[in-house]
Image 1 (tube, rainbow, N blue to C red):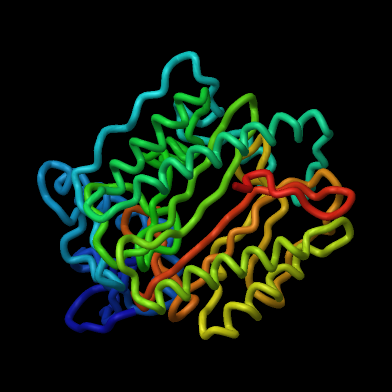
Image 2: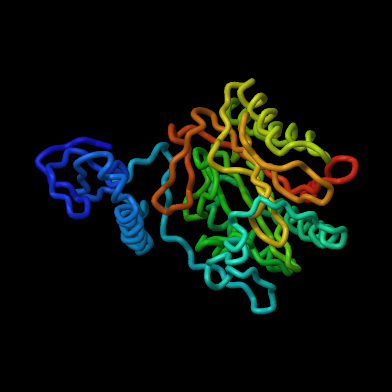
Length: 365
């Protein structure tokens, strides 16, 4: 926490002199957020953190009404800035089958099993359906990748991906998932994951990750790729290549009897061999009837992931590899995860099923 003086503590029923200020409030430009001690700050965190969301919401609409940066005063870790206004939420025709969160934003089916580490074994008939949905997701992301050019906004790419999904009878899984506003994630440069498509045109030398998920016939598919925009420097291309290889090396380990926790060892070894770091906050996951479920698959070494691979397990492997530190932070939109040092991040993801002989990549090109 930052230090100041001549202030009173904002803790409940506390009026002691305060010299510590909430660091998030400083970034958001929220005044008078002083506390007398770290312990008092922690005791009041449950109520105090609500102020951050209120500030983000208050600043957001102002940007959407004609501003560019929706969070003036926020201290970004890198050079990337969001460009508002965001376009309205895209419509989904009534005949398209929708997941349980499509209207409310609340994935109740996931919440009901949140504490479960049970990994479902899918029967052949379910895998057959999922294979078709994964093929659609692959078609959609390839259409999105073809649209990546200098001058194209990530909002335009979102539109293209949304329409390609609908044309194939699918629902874009990210749309309104826990309130997410768009139909895909577009993560540019220092954005690690969950970037919100906006009005910023892609620039020569950018790298951008497209994360596409499709829901159809009761099943979700999930994949992503990082691609260069125009002329990218050698280290950026090396980062992209390393991230792809990290995923491929982990997939090569998938077979019945393998431990989920061992995947992170090979990923981190390869990332560090070229001077890169592995993000620890975000993981691979099970995916089928639920968008996110067991198993939980960390991508870093010496993790404590639970589970042994069995035939019929379906999940993603999606390592996020950083040019600098592995540490991340969150933009005020509560979605966009960025590198703490502002350096670039790259990621690749596939959905796969464990087979008798090893693995089938369901989202393969």
